[in-house]
Length: 283
Image 1: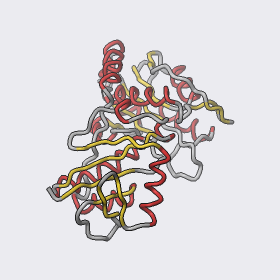
Image 2: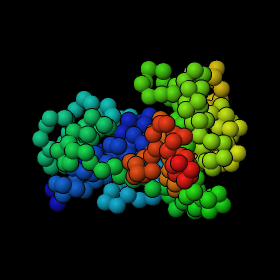
Image 3: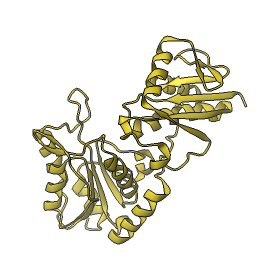
Image 4: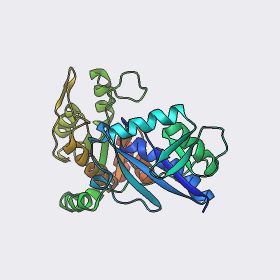
């Protein structure tokens, strides 16, 4: 074994961002025979949840939970020094374009992706498997609602106006998304995952057989109510929704979701009505 790689992501990052970092680092580790330690920040980015509360173990990865104040200190050191001491061991802080050697610490996407390019460009994304208790609940829901025979619809609404990903929390953009989806016939059976109450209500009024997991929309904005991303219950529901979504027959993916690359063969593009009608055997 060459040594250890310790990696971590910014405290504000969500599960998807963290697994992007981990996937890149693991591709390097697998190629060059390193072992991986993933520092999981129990921070506001994941509603202060510990890793094992949300997710199953990742083969070949040791996960350590870290409090938010400790992760912020690690971030400060990683940006200003060449080495960092974690526990009883010292690690060389990796910088892009440097030659990795010995025990390495990699901070967030820039450093993680630079290692990934050294390992296997186009590296495979590590699947974030929900915890056993979450999977037990989603398996029951999937059976009760026959999810493998449904069209999954994912609409993530971007809360930061400066980001290019659409739709934002702007009525015009939300309605544009709805127009593209509601061209699908009303009789299609669907499972809906969204953080917008408006999107959920409009899709539920269009499709006669529309199911979704119950949740609260506690964040009020001028264009409606949204899921509060720092709510602990919402974080558990999010993992349940991802697991259910991946069980669907085909998936409309607007805004992205965790583990989307693992079900890329199920994703359908616009015009959605054509793809859905084909799936329903009516074309």
